[in-house]
Amino acid sequence: MWSISDSIHRKKFGQFFTPNVIAEFMKGWVLEDKPSNILDPALGPGILLENIKEVNKIGYEIDSSIYEHFQIPDDVDIYFKDFLISDWDKKYDAIICNPPYNRFQNIEDRTKIKSLIEEKLNCKISGFSNQSLLFLWKCIYQLEEMGRLSIILPSDFLGLRSGIEIKKYLTENNLIHSLILLDSTKALPFENVLTTACILNIQKKHNKQLLYAKNISLNDLRNDIFDRCEKIKFSEVNPMEDWNKSIKYDFFADANYVELKEIAKCSRGIATGDNSFFIFDKAQMEKSKIPVENFDLVIARSADITGSILDNKLKNKMVENGKIKYLFNPIILDQYTQEYIDYGELSGVNKKYLCSKRNKWWKPEDKSPSIIWITPQYRVAPKIIFNNVHLKNLTCFHSIYIKGDKNLSHALFKYLSSEKGLSEIIKVSKQMANGLYKLQPGDVNRILLPIELFKNL
Ligand SMILES: C[S@@+](CC[C@H](N)C(=O)[O-])C[C@H]1O[C@@H](n2cnc3c(N)ncnc32)[C@H](O)[C@@H]1O
Image (cartoon, rainbow, N blue to C red; front, side):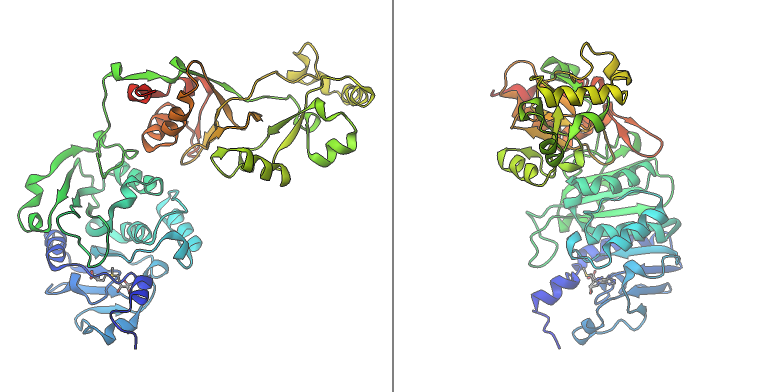
């Protein structure tokens, strides 16, 4: 038998129990609508279903050994199984939940659960979603129309990229009744857990507005907290904001912002006209005997770069792994180079659209390396690279060139990579029917940058 003070066991199963005040508050709200059944998908000792009468109570618990330490709730139908992979098609009038928390790396079956969620809820979710978010997605699915779900969660997801899809889903479907952020400086909700938490109340009906409150102490929950909440229309809610700080669109005075084109210029990467002719890997280049001076190092596919800062160390590793390619860009017309150009003409490369428009069809566009790259299409967020090594790029990235003070490049890169920057990028992107976002260089030039970016430079 494990001991209740065994922190490894408790952490593995996320066994951190709900304080009474919070449990009473959550129960009070879900029971208002007089449900005929109620589910706790992470039952533990059962505090969230305690003292609920005349309602059919159902619980899931993966760790039956927990009842060696706690009395087994005898008025609850308990399923001893993993909630995340069980009984997807059962629906409930009310759900109340304090889910276990584990980082995405530690979740068994996470790929299977992710695909199930995506299939059932017709959405895309981040592969970095932690365990409590997976519980949230599944609870939403299993809630009856008009049903109520009250869930307490660590509030980190409200400001993380991995939380963006759920925030979008909740906003687009007007699902939130109230979001209450607890104040961890006044009372940490979970014993020995240094985390901030929020209570999310979801009602599956077309809510017009939601209630939002921050810094709420356990004491506040005892009183009528909803009266103290800010009422916010769904049309004002911005899923891209960090909801720990603000949930609304940041409507700003134009005077405080400038378009990116004021300080930088975005243009597309190098288009060769025929990559199979112009792009070599190392072995092909060596075999061709064309002088190495006739090639520029380039990145040809955005997937070939893993980090976001391209420094010499990463560049050398990428050269070693064959991720950096060689762009045929002749400056010396020796015998081997001339033979290769003749071969291109024989194969009709010179007649291809872009090549045929050039003075010398075999000379690709002369674009200098840019300091920041951004992918022209993305699903959740574009890939943004700080190119510290003067590497050239093909059209897999757009190039951003800084016009004036080069010190701006760091600030601009940081801003574009931030949540706030991302929300501005999304505003200028075009969303396609398949959920993909597209960015033209002109769109990038219109991204709004806060003036503060230039302060202290
Ligand atoms: C954070 S505790 C909450 C317990 C209780 N409902 C409360 O509010 O105090 C989460 C409980 O879920 C159980 N659990 C963990 N993973 C589970 C899973 N995949 N399916 C069902 N229960 C799980 C844990 O053993 C633990 O008892």
